[in-house]
Picture 1 (cartoon, helix red, strand yellow):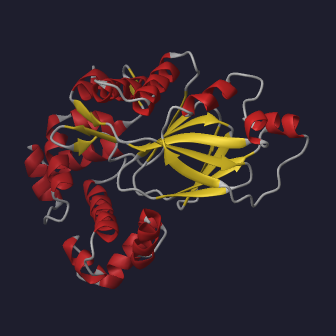
Picture 2 (cartoon, helix red, strand yellow):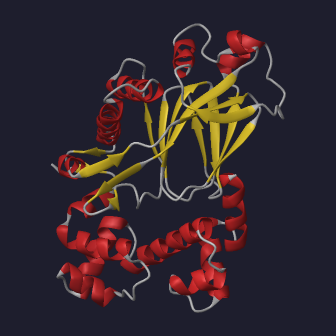
Picture 3 (spheres, one colour):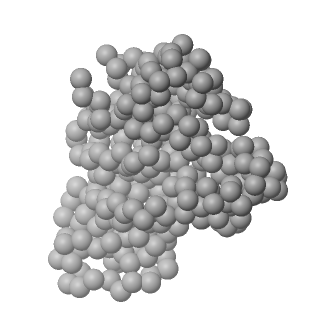
Length: 325
């Protein structure tokens, strides 16, 4: 019932997809975003590295949901299949990579994946990695993002003819060749894709994503909404427990069991994410942003921000502006 209840109340917003195409050995900075991102690898092999010193290896058909604010750097890698096709690895440093708007040509890469030329060498002259990417906006209970509390990537694998692969391919087709009703159809397909993807992560009586269970708990949901709707408000453990209608100790234990961290730890996380949004989307001075998210000292704010995002606030602002350009 958990997943049914959550997803039945979830609203999805269809964002444009981009096709990111990178030659083997080349790299592409995908930036950091204020909302989670979804990637679907159509062709080739890729390594995505993060500022959190984490790496993911993606193969054809891999679907990944990446937490918000994780800076992503994609490198196209050769695979055993690539070595068989080319005889030897392509030299690194190739500077031929870009992201472009999704168009009907995306299906060509899927066809190559299903043939003897999974890396697209026959058409391009050398192996290449192709990935469909988009922002992921899915909200639950008065605007709370379904993936706002994601602290680890969600990974799944879609085969061309399995339900997840078929649904994602239909979604891309609707968006690549829009017709009357395409947006409504794409919204249904995106939600169905999320349902299929989460089924493997939250089975009956075995929810491996505890924040999903927490969102269904009405008591915790009230406190969560207060924190997410206004993370800069003077919340403390007593006020959050009162919103949940629980004692301080019961609330602290239930919250810790659900999220694997304390309520105040999560509140600090939300405030720092809000600060990241202000840094990338406003011209407010850093001192003012620090005050808005509850830090009276810029040095304390800088230390907390750098601990969370592995980058100083000023550098984060400069990088966000460069990515936006």
